[in-house]
Image (tube, rainbow, N blue to C red; front, side):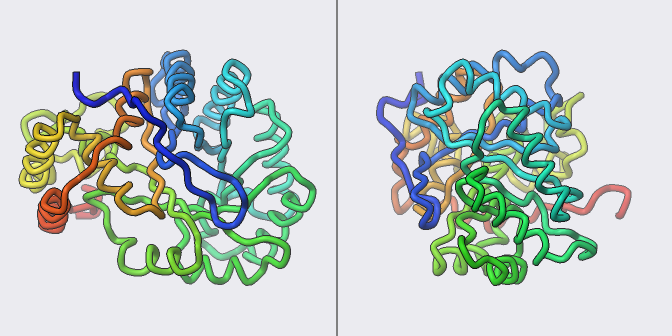
Length: 323
């Protein structure tokens, strides 16, 4: 077997200055949104296996399945012990007014069956700028002061939004920014990562495996069918063809390291101690594979090869109907 089952704890890192310590790799619970019907019990099993392997960060959002993911997470917390996990969820972008945000938090707490959210995140900044960010942050700080949340985070915030949001906080600070980051989505390296490093804000990397495009399961001859990935431009044959060099480099490294390609992709993210990837898992085996990435130590040559090949990938992300 490859290095799928982690034999040592992945280690932990603090979220800002919150005192909250999370595992170096987390688990995204988006898969329980209903996109994969009938997988709830297996996902709960994946959460339990993650706990066994030292993974404590669980990330979800109220919008995932209109609360279904939070409900599944709540069942897992009841089964495996609330105190074993750091629970992170996100408030939907249409619930950012002061009173709406208070209600949204209350509903999330109820769905998960808990009294306190460890990391409460704003899922997206208001794209139409109709809701003043000052109002949203005042609502978040009220929840913090009341003990309903332990820390404030954001998701998909550009640096300008992050700076503005922090300016409206007086009793707390933003401890994390959840951003899309992977070997084929590296835009945040230019501005977001340097700012967050400087300010002590952790990067939580969503879609670290690019919905499986970096797992080695797909190529120009084999594309996913009949699931949510069919609408993702990454899985178009021309884009998978453009990834050929990167996937080949990953495959060689995985073979030499005795691990999987997914573990290589996750280990590449964890080379940066400020980044916490949150891959999903639909089974206990996938949870083991994710956790096992913490054991993969990439050499300087490995990192140089991955950096070179990933920068050569030019994905066309424009949706078909806009071309």
